[in-house]
Length: 235
Image (tube, rainbow, N blue to C red; front, side, top):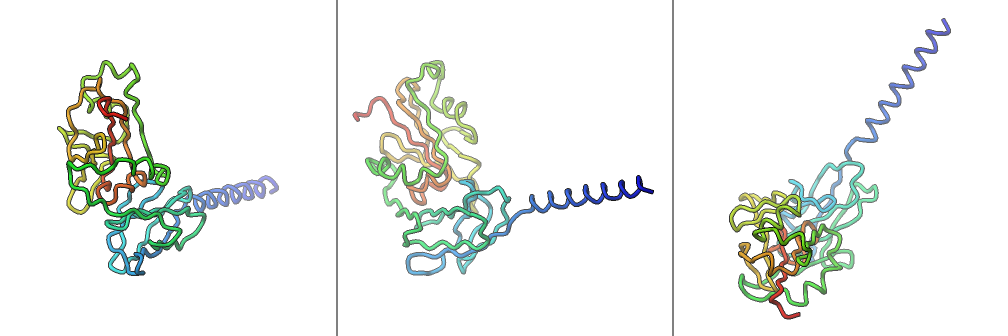
């Protein structure tokens, strides 16, 4: 009798432990609104979790709803025209974003046309501000790159999540409602839509910006940004 009672207690304890484990892994639902500086709703803002884009977007009222893992740390929004903003989740289930306030990291839309100089010192000035995202850097002076035949080969072998087809670069399978979104290419401060054919020997450094790090380039950086500095540039 005692053995049967002990067995029942053990089974109950195991069931309770299993139930608690399932509860701890249960996703958390976060809701909120995204407003611009005039307190108007921002539609089609993309929700990011820990610097990764999700399929969740704000509706016409600027509201969003997303389920995240309990281990998620940060939630952010990527907007077209207002820049990006990011907050620590910290156990909250209601998180609102208001651009134009001290809590929002706003980025003006880049108005520079492809081929015009548009980065200059602004990249260095804003780099720390958007350091919450992912940045992969390739040091062109490293001798191990001497055997590479192209810059595309350098990027694909050294940075995960990057696909290069011809001269088009896709970072982390970035997409919008119309399909894949190519990364913005910036070579010595000049904006380009395609990856140029620069010999690895002439490359000083390459930085691949993902998530919030690409926010400094406004809507142009939606698909990520590849910043290339050549040895031909005069610092």
